[in-house]
Length: 75
Image 1 (cartoon, one colour):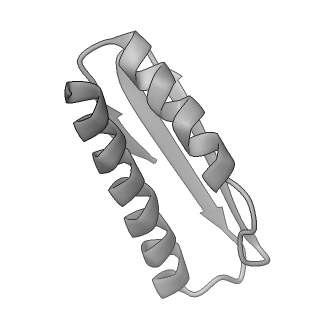
Image 2 (image 1 turned 60 degrees about the vertical axis):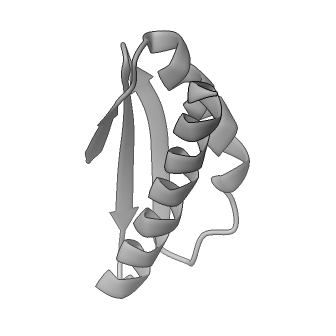
């Protein structure tokens, strides 16, 4: 699980909502849960018979989207 801090719970929830459309078309055996816990966004990737590189590439893409959403929220 990866936890990413935000300035507020509202920002963390907004980031979760922004990422929901990205939570589709995963490789077979790979799943992702994204949720907020207070001012923290949590990502849980689970893979069964999935190459580690596929998991890392997916996480990298999600983290890039989170980085963009944080920049947009900062103004």
